[in-house]
Amino acid sequence: MTIIEATDTHRSNKNGWLNRNLRLLFIGSALSGISSGIFAVVFNLYILEIGISPEMLGGILSAGPFAQAIGSIPMAFLMERVGYKKVFVFIYGITTLGRFVQIATTNVPLMAAAAFGGGLAFAGDFVVRLPFMAANSAPEDRNKTYSTSSILYSVSMAAGALFAGYAPNFLRQFMGDHLAGGYQITLLLACVFALLGVLPFFFITEEKVKIGAKISLAPYFWGMDRFTIQQAAVSLFVGIGFGLINPFMNIYYVYHLGTTREFFGVVSALVIFPAMAATLIAPMLANKIGSVRIVTIARVIIPGFVLTLAFTTNRWLGTFGYWGTSILMTMSQPLSFAFAMLVATPRTKPAASAWLNVTFWLGVGLSAPLAGTFMAQGNYQAPLMIASAAILMAGLVNDWFFRPIELSMQAKEIGS
Image 1: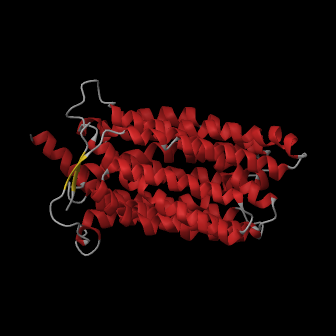
Image 2: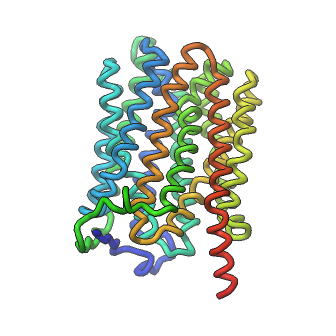
Image 3: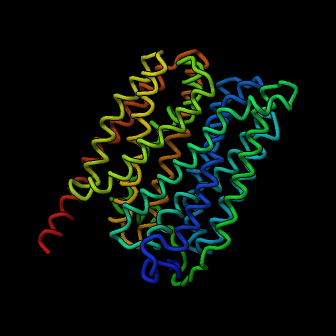
């Protein structure tokens, strides 16, 4: 198997844990996050505004996740063959192109095809990001590194969401008071941020790629170890829950809670502050009681917030449910990823990160059309109820599979 070693790893870093490669990764991700935040607030509303039905919207939104599920393992192969730098440039470049095509046409099949193409490329973001951050951080800094990555991406998405809440109404005055035109210009600006996000990856220190044996399918399929299979199963449940909630949150707010787009934009931006605090505290709690236990507790609590959002039409109570869900998801995911990379061996890390991505996006792809179908019938409760059950299952299975592993690791540390 090909072994990739970044030249700017934690072993050569003399300026603290945040080395040059990580800084470039975070800058590129932040610019991409601004773009994603704008899309999260505006894209669904733009689609509905130009007369596309919720069922078709669900189909468009599911194309990208299915592509990410399909593309994760091939992108892991590509990473092993050409290294991190070229793959990151490819990932963010093609993703930007896919977003542009989605707003340059009103043809639904072409939109779905663009989403699928962008999803194939973006499949590599997660698969490449985890081992890249592992290669550029010391083991004791992993939780901090993953949490920082999550926080910065969330902050950038919040900035994009805040901008997207107000930009369309300002821009529509230049489009003959045409709201769809204001949405479209806002989304074009999102594409500009995404394009800028490609640039930092050109400056990543070129990695050394040592070619040993030919790249093998074995770690990804018939040679997959039990831990990778278990991680993939948990990630599937998380993906199902995510796909029923996050892609449609702006629709829940506007059509279920009866709020304005501006209100949702502000709420989406402000949630970053408690989410950031929780994510910063989480590694310290994990060091005391364990990452697995923290993740399990978070995922067991999340369904209560999801159901609150489902069964209220009060915007403030709905915001309480949304914030609780978002904070706990943001806090728990980095710990889950860090634990996966800590337990996985160097040989199985690419496969573990790939399958985490495959099953997560498979879950999103399966659940997004289901949510669209329910919403077309005016049923906003059912998707959230199913999501709460899926996330609860993710928490329980997480504890069943991984708590014994964590306790064993803790015992060995005490013994040594």
